[in-house]
Image 1: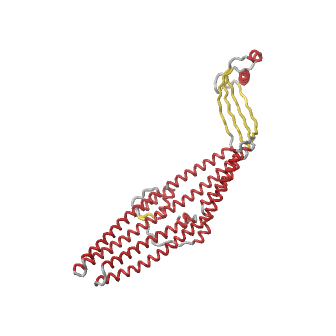
Image 2: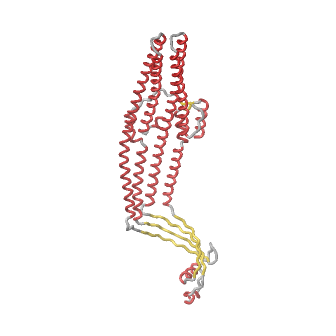
Image 3: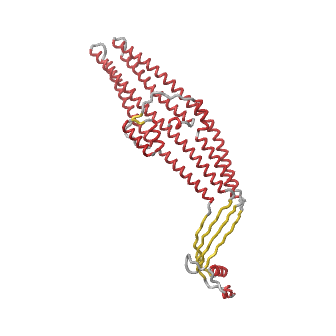
Length: 437
């Protein structure tokens, strides 16, 4: 299903020649290298949890042991286990000075944990909380990648809009050159006016080439984040800044932020690590059983056989207090993370307010630039009329054009800043994927 979706995305890009923001986000979430690496970490965490749960199951051990001895007690036991003992073997001379005897022991044994001081349960909970923390961190990493895609996409939109501004600037400069040349031919303008207009045109063409190069680099940045070669494509036009409700974002942020949830899971893991460390100083109860084959001549032989079952309890205490100190270290790390959570919770609100302030500043800049564009266009129109009748200089005309070009560029820059601040606001609130999906 996922492959089919990707194929449809690529077909849409190829046919339309345009990559939308949502398509770029989907590609990044599926193919970004950091996200792929994180998925492997989660798989490792899942395997660790399965490994911890394996502690509930018995351990089975198979052995094959060969011995050759003339030590009286071992020779006696080997012959007895092989079920070859006879009455004459009770002869003191044979008991005290036995002949060398070979013994092959084939043994299958099982050890069953009954209660290991809570060790297995604590190991399972540690692995479970670590896995939950990894999953929350993965969610936050996906948010981070979406934010980076959004910023890269907006930079591409800025470059595309800058090309449009530069193209309009070139068109206006060409008109100024034409006007100066026509007036110079009839003697109402100087050659220097023509040269000044041509210099201005040359600078405008230089800005256009720079904007095109910036657009190419911006599109490559999108390819880098999505980890996909997209070929030639255009980004969508985005000519407005979305509205936001900052109070709603604040009210949801502390519940939505995955990095806070991840730290909370890490704290739970450390609580279980504390219990895991102390379990080494608690009683260990277990059962065991084994079945053995004994042979004088070959492995897996069965001259004799026997079984043994039983149960045991052991209890050890570390007099150097290493276990206790290790457990206490987990509590100190837990306290450290609790302080970090407090700092992070305070930082969340600060980050939202900072992003919102940047958003408002960009909105004001956007409105100001739009007003200056209207004013600059009117100023340019009046000065152009005055230049045609000899009441203004070419320098005045080009200065007015410069102010108009500057206002146009500042408008697209303010729009870019507004879009980025909007994304930063959603990211700070933990809502960026929920809103942009």
